[in-house]
Image (cartoon, rainbow, N blue to C red):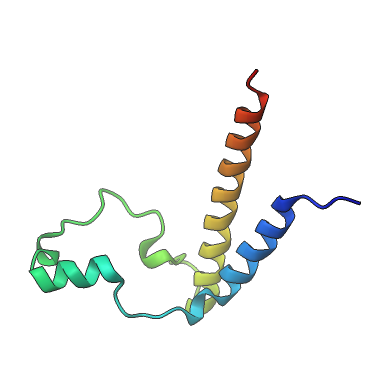
Length: 92
């Protein structure tokens, strides 16, 4: 039985989403440079916030909210990637 690579990608995305609360809370490289050069304070933020700080605000447990947002994000990216791959494969 041949297994689809999408299955393994999905499993990996699930594992990474479950481990997401263990990620560093330190700023990433772009944030650090923006703070170092002094233009981070000029940030006006997004026009709207779907998931502020990558968490669902109505979930009381912060770690669970982070896992759920990671799972949702991974699912969205996997579905879009799958649909794009199918569309490109269907082209003559």
